[in-house]
Length: 410
Image 1 (cartoon, rainbow, N blue to C red):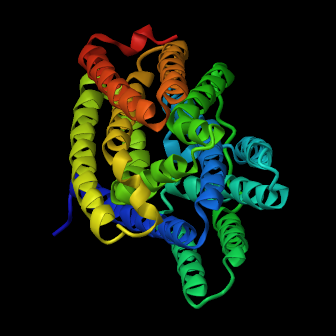
Image 2 (cartoon, rainbow, N blue to C red; image 1 turned 180 degrees about the vertical axis):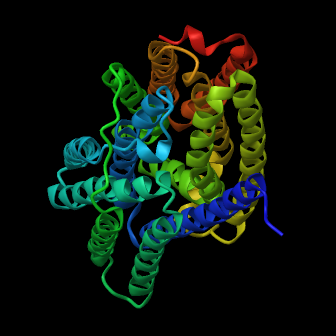
């Protein structure tokens, strides 16, 4: 008996999701191991500085993905080309190297302001390497090489475990960043071999307009998501800086595993379904938003319990006051991201670009006022209010989506 193509495709989709979840789980495990080792072994001041480097690295990673991964997918979808055939190798690498250099330079200057130029240089090199090592894995994910991407994540997890073991055995904590850096370089070298030389030259006349707007959106979103850490470090509140970072990387780590593993697949699915119209895209978007909300809620409850018991006498306990506002901030950011992903295929690039810019300007401006007026407490209340507003805006965007039509795209 033969299996119908639809059943085969469903099985492949389920298998892809499982391997992607394993991939992201291993990648998050590696980051978790490095992060928790840093939190336990470094001083609060050193961990706060590392958090700034990581924050700037995350901004650059998001920007690199936007330029080299997501922009080509959107451009190709408008011409009926599959996402798997959309990546331009050389353009992607040029962008990634530029964004990695910017992240490293900004980290060096931001952290070096305190006078610790040697430590600033080490963190800057780590931040830049985080950006460069991310691209091969993302290319493999989009091209369907889930197993190879999972192997890269496995290497990262092994490196994180070795770092944790080294510190536990009493090796000087100055070894942490070099081990982290070497692990990422091994991931990068292996990823380059796995990706090979395959490339695409598919570009429409509007490719550059799409690419720079999506990339600019990633910059806005990145700063909006990391501005709290950067502002708290600027006003020299190391405890709050560390607490915010721990809330993101520990309390909500399991949710990030699922979100980051499945979201690229959701984006590919929306690109494919966009040919069927807005209602097909809307159905997937709503289901994904509900799943994200439930996952974040569960992680917040479990994370708070763990931080207040298992980690109550260690550095991660500084995250307790920030679990709720950080959870709401993540939920609102993800909801807004899905709303923009769904809308992107049916409106001009200028619309999503302006929506992102307006959102981030409000976000950064409000958080800046909150921090400089009320410190960490002012930031908490600002995050709660802004999150509610962003969720309401996202729901409104999805509700009006069925009224849009692909013919309105310019």
